Image 1 (cartoon, rainbow, N blue to C red):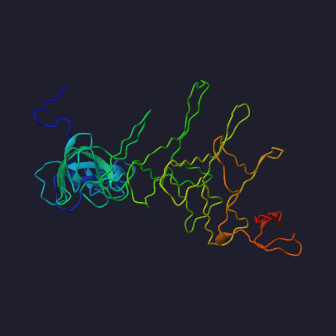
Image 2: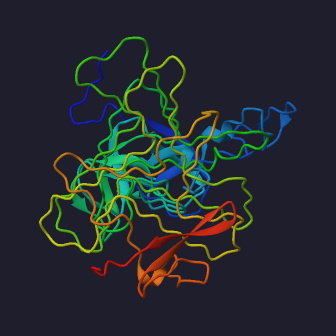
Image 3: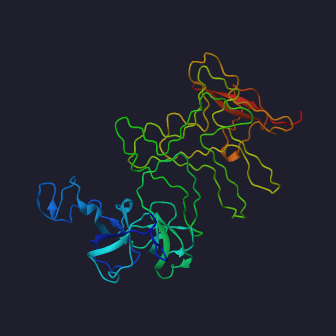
Length: 395
């Protein structure tokens, strides 16, 4: 069955709800269900089967889907809709009014955005106005704008496709093409807030984002490859010289009052018995410089250690260790090599004079050294030894 249109919006569905607030009512203003109310509508307490204006939690209070209020952080997941064009506009609450429910229909919404077709607007704490969404939860996106009109100076109406919040998402594949609103401030293409997930206690294990997959017995052939997570990006913009463009940005903190046994970023590979692998490296760093422009620094790995708290029992910049039951020595702890047409490195080790690991003069027990020769300390099982670096004097 098809519904007649002829200039009307046949997809839009209106619903009668009770607005509990006292603010002035405007067409398109956003409202959320009062999800934790105990006030009912029918005057009947299902909890004890008697007349009464309240219904105890757990007894299917109809007020939860008929009573609406101003959007707030606590109720954004219970978006009811926007006020439909109604005679109630201009009046103040509390009162009954009509809303458009968020079912994907295109309806007028009240917004303060400089509207551009295709951009998102959403719910913000303590506001009836749909505001530009940056991809986080405040504003929480609920609509895609369908008009290009500037409402940033004076709040007004714009057509928008209205969608609900708090949806459970199940899919076999997904594609996102986020659109940034505005040119300044933070913006997120996909923002996952795991706060409500990281609440386990007894032997709990919580993973905010889990990516898993097993390649089954079917073998890949030819020039093929898989990845559990692929990240790629390119810069073509003439940005400021202090602009930072990162492929992965990870920052982990143990805050005041926190107690942890270990804090780290873990990268691990495991070659199990029965498997065949020609090349296995837990972390591969490939830095390539093809730019002819001058630069102050270029490198493969930068480890910055900032220890301003109490000293640890063991401290190091880089630790290389073996573990398990290999029962034989690895070939090299550090292996330096070059590709066939490359020229390798001009020096094995470079030490900034201000951060020298030891410019020790000769002692009575040391071999006779000339002025300028260096003794580099090496600690083995608690005893200090020295590597001697001789200055090249040409004699």
